[in-house]
Amino acid sequence: MNADAREPWDELMRRLARAKGFRRLTPEEALAEYDAAAPVALPKDQIDRIVRNVVAGRLPPRPHPAPQPSEHGDAVDEEMLALNRNAGELDADTKRKLDELRKEALDGDGGGEDEIRLDD
Image (tube, rainbow, N blue to C red; front, side, top):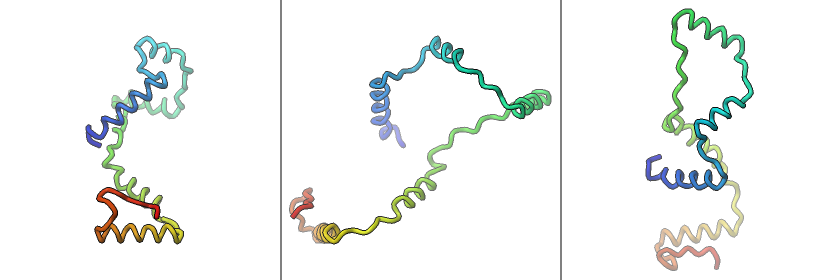
């Protein structure tokens, strides 16, 4: 997504956050939240792995970078195709109206240039 396309979404998110009362924490608020959080014990195997790496002088494994949108583009496209694979059955009136609209669009003799009429 380019910067121009992101801008409206970023503004919408800022407005939504402001309306919901969300904002960034000050350093003091963040420290207070950290201090108030319940401690979480590391599993024994993770502690052992850390100790082994420190004793061996190895650096801890680096976290994987966040996936880039291009890495998942094909998977998303396949999911969209799967979601929209079965359009279902159209009733007779809808099919007739769609056929008329397609014929008008192809013939170029619609009512107005930008006018689309769905009712008779």
